[in-house]
Length: 457
Image 1 (cartoon, rainbow, N blue to C red):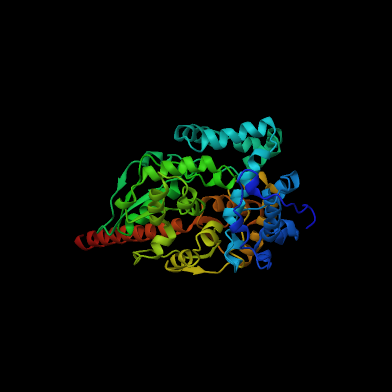
Image 2: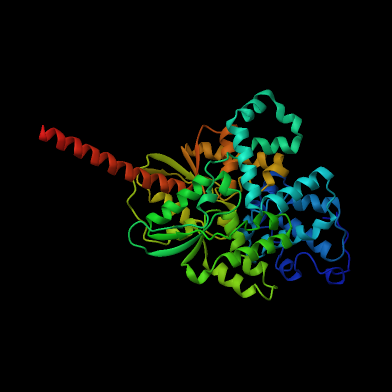
């Protein structure tokens, strides 16, 4: 590790930004994190392991320059936080990599084109409901008009440039109608009301995962929940935070803290593990904000992932049979960020007809990691290829996960390396089982009516 010269000027004498020394000092360099790290597993390079990156962060803290090599090693990190699960010393690596990227931000040298794209995506698109709806409508037209098929068949994606070509391949489907029409509404519990919950609809998910959001509301309703979707909510800031844009993330966090009144709900539910991990850390994000520190604490205490919440209930067992072999890929921010592993598996195994098969190395990242699969496409696809080899070994017909970003990545994996497996959120699998039960009831009633008519004749 001689890439950085050890210096003696501490960060406190510079600008006070970056990873906190107390967090860095928790690392005892034992190396137990190495095998848990996807980039180390792929590259075998110490500087691209959690231990190696922490070493580099320490050097920068002591005054080493933030150069292109340092930036590259930090960029290659997926932020999956698998190292946190493996670490016996409790190193908060997710916090460290986010702080390192915030410190790097002023040192990045972006092309004018890349800077414009970044500004549009993070500043204009994600925080804006109207902009997302316009973009969603344009995407829907592109896909349904046949343009997307034509572009792909003719190889015209190459004309877009390498970055946009990669993005086009991974583009999700726009789902009409968008979920925005549901925001601001309250959906009653089906049967006796047991809970009153608020639902975090997200940002892009309202356009590209509208059916997942609807399925989540239905499953909650079937389990005795009155579901409120507060109107003023917006983007959670997770993608901003992962890119080092902490101030942007804080502004979005304040908006959501204002939008939800925790005392009015038994839980604040999200179906997106990446968002949930950030929502549960608003208290840390806003800890230095005098006006928001306490409200953020109350907010985070109520946040639960949908699988976490449902697995903690006496689940409505009126499910129809779902005859399928199902495996489960852990979402990193659910498994490692929120430390929730058993809940999704418990839910899947509760469904009649499901043959559950454990996926080897299910807690190793699939390569999605927010926008990592676009900006670090080669590494992402390398990780995905290995993941799909393990999926094939299970002979699963359904690959379940708990995060829309993971769903997109795994769907791409099925197209490129798979065998036509269906990729579904755990909540969608539950929703299918509940729908099968209702369809079976309808069929039973129809048969009973037909039998009655025959007896009368």
